[in-house]
Length: 197
Ligand SMILES: [Zn+2]
Image (cartoon, rainbow, N blue to C red; front, side, top):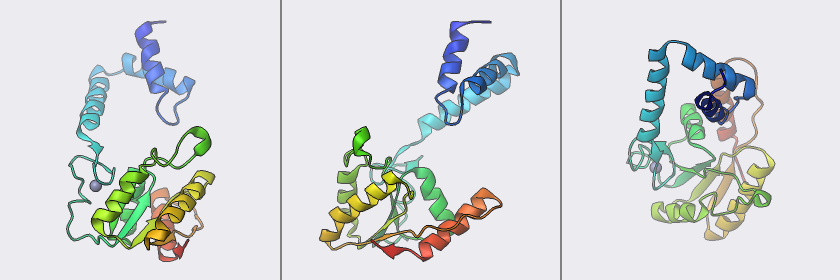
C-alpha cells in the first residue's frame, strides 16, 4: 500500500509532538482505512480551529478574538504582567485563580546558540506592552531550564533599570495524582512563594 498520498499524510503526522514513525504509520492507516466520516470531521475540525485562532497583537496569546479576552478584560490589573512561554501556560496560571493581572506570551525561550535572541522572544513587543500598561511588576513564570534561566536573567537585567519589580515563581515540588490538578496546586504554591530576581 505504498502511496505518495499516504506517505505525505505520515510525514505530516510526524510533525505532531510525541508522534514517531510507527505511530504516524498507524494513524495514517487508521485514517484512510477507518470511518471516513470521522476522518473528514477531524480534518474539518483542524481546519476550523487553525483558521479561528490567531495571536493577539498585544500579548501573543492564541485567541479567537483580537485583541484577546485578557487584553479586553477591563477588570484585570494592569500593574503586573505574568510572562509565560506559551498560550497553554496562560491557561495553567489562570486555573490557579492566583493572578488577576495581564499576560504576555514570549513564544520562545532565549537560546543564543540556536539563534533564538531577544527578537525571537518578542522582547521589543514586551517593552512596548509594559509602557502601554504602565506596569510595575513582571512575574516570570518560565521553565526552570537552561533556556528559562537565560531568559529570566536577560529580562531582569533589561527591565530592572526601568524601575520594574521582577519576581519569579519558586520551584514547587510536583506530587502524584491528576496532572492538571497537580499542576494547578504546584503553580499556585509557586505563585504564592514567588521571589524577587
Ligand atoms: Zn492579548
